[in-house]
Amino acid sequence: KQEVTQIPAALSVPEGENLVLNCSFTDSAIYNLQWFRQDPGKGLTSLLLIQSSQREQTSGRLNASLDKSSGRSTLYIAASQPGDSATYLCAVGPPNAGKSTFGDGTTLTVKP
Amino acid sequence: DAGVTQSPTHLIKTRGQQVTLRCSPKSGHDTVSWYQQALGQGPQFIFQYYEEEERQRGNFPDRFSGHQFPNYSSELNVNALLLGDSALYLCASSYSTDTQYFGPGTRLTVL
Image (cartoon, rainbow over the protein chains, first blue to last red):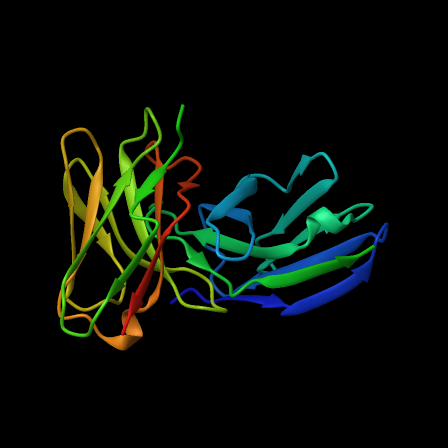
């Protein structure tokens, strides 16, 4: 059974700081890994998708890496802004591309 | 493109009642998945529909059932509601095995 863990559960940083969010998974036989952002009471917004054959993906100030062998992914956010405050979730998909397994998220607060 | 839409936005029911939630996938998408997200937790997979059939199912009781229509829209039905069914219900659509796009969710409160 795939298990996904995100550490830390909460993080507070001053504006402008670079930061890293962590995601670990127990079964390396994944199809893809996706990072999402969720604002309070809202749905999920996809940030980055990394296929199992890829090592990283970049979008603007965001960079996500994937190391299947160690069962880890990181989401790097450069020059954080107050508008980045949200919960960040990672999800891994199995090889048959069925259900995704989510972590419980990291709640990020960026202080002005 | 309206993206993934869900209705209703909010819903309040009492224990023992039945509820139906609806999802319209993003244009061009043929696969719909449903997730339950309790407060402070990540979404839990309920089931996935493809070609009008349930393709995969998570660890949820038979009280949770679904349907997919020929236009790829989908419904989630929950019978005999329990207090613990209170959650945000998310629908996600995709084309085959590609990126999932999530809807805004339906907030269900069971009293």
